[in-house]
Length: 196
Image 1 (cartoon, rainbow, N blue to C red):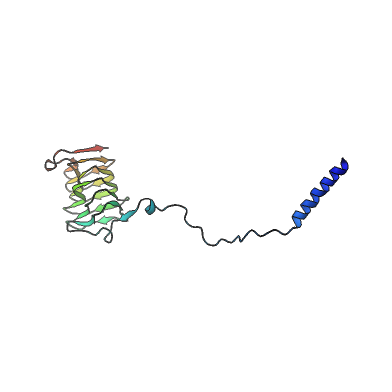
Image 2 (cartoon, rainbow, N blue to C red; image 1 turned 120 degrees about the vertical axis):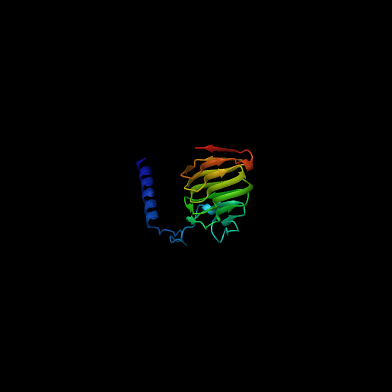
């Protein structure tokens, strides 16, 4: 029994010695072939967005910038408006305009942001609008105005009417005549609701 045990122990010891003195077999280069590539999608791949600027949203007769196609748009800087022109005019359905924390300012007789027709599914959010005659003028259906600071406009802060929608989480102050006007006589009745 001891002899068998000795043989097994000797065989195990020799096996270990053989393994330890055998040259290691190469498994390939450890030097990377290049830098690691991206593993996640970019924001523009998840939600393609277009900047509001002279190249992508050139103006029209009534506005410094005009959004004429459906899609998602955003500001990359503050906008100081041009006298007597609207700041941004939206002329399409299914538009999201993210002010991205920036401001539209002016000393003007026009509107900061205007949707002046029956366009549907428009959202304007996340920024400041001040110094215009009307901060945000919205005549459309199923619109959402949210997280806006609308102050110091010479007539009305937010003027909406005619269709359905929501004014949500907006701060409106120091506008000369009205903070928020919903449904003027020429629009008929309005079912916009205000959530403060």
